[in-house]
Amino acid sequence: MPVTTLPFGTAPDGRPAHLYLLSNGRGMVVGATDLGACLVSCRVPDREGRLPDVLLGYDSATGYADNLMAFGGTIGRVANRIGGASFELGGTTYELSANLAGSCLHGGREMWFQRRWEASVGDSSVTFSLLSPDGDQGFPGDLDVRVTYALAGDGCLALRYRAVPSAPTLVNLCCHAYWNLNGHAAGDVCGHSLQVAASRYTVTDKDLVPTGELASVEGTPLDLRRPRRIGDCLAEVPGGLDHNFALDARCGAGPSCSEPDAADDARPRLAATLVGDRSHIRLRVLTTAPGLQVFTAGGLSEPHGKDGAHYDPSAGVALETQLFPDAIHHPSFPAATDPVFGPERPFEGETLLCFDVAEG
Image (cartoon, rainbow, N blue to C red; front, side, top):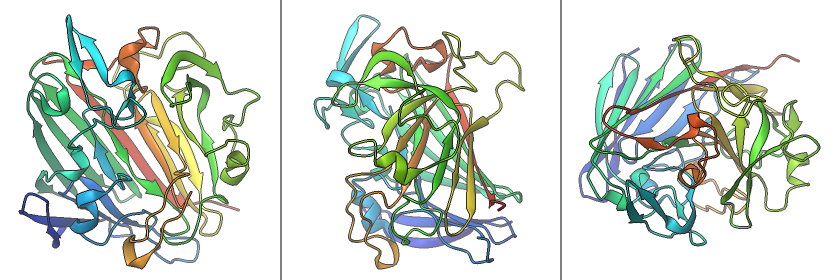
């Protein structure tokens, strides 16, 4: 289906921002903007045939120019935390901005999701590109980045990432969308059920920086191997969920993640399933990434959401497919989580967000 391009206000650099609407011809419509390469909206059919927008966000570029909660944003150069806001690579220590409890979070200063990207429209897809120069955010090497959103007729939205460095550097890209499958303004997601295909998680310190330990979810509130009501999890986890899960499809019970050595092995595999308790909309997340950060936004308070909505704590849940946080400091982590990329090893990844209506 053709892509519709609409004005979306003005980016911080003074250039016009645009909204790109992708439709699959079956009622599903996805909106994305060149400001931050952000996902803005996602309308999908519910059990009654209605089309709720299930993505938290803003009405125009004005909101995305600040976007402190990273609604729908493309995160880079490195998603999640880098402990101590520094790292050593090739004998050189690189200093980053410490923007959260002494760590560098989501790349630190001048975050990518607040910048204007270049857009290229295809058939039912839009690709956003950004050139991150050497020294950007404190990281070495130029980085040529492409993020593609492609919508298929089967209700799957594909997110495809490719980032080519000019020199060895760190890369870990993800989408920071918040989902409420009852509708973005429908209240909290406590009644949603969530299932995550992970037997282990990365243990963290009090500032949510990994210690290097991979622990079993068995007997913990993080055991989501079977569907569980999010509200029940939150009752057992002070502050809510903000945890990285080691996905079984890539990081099984053995000591290391699987290393794709065939085309079939490199395809996205099921990471999580989220179901809205009132809409019965089901979201299945499939990915090539080894990790999934589940974030229930316990500190969320946004009075200026879309359509005048006020987003309170746990108004949405983010399911961030990515490499493990702080992996540069933990060589014991599985090899597939290595965040060092270079000209001969570009960063590539794919995540599928597949929507339908759950039975029952």
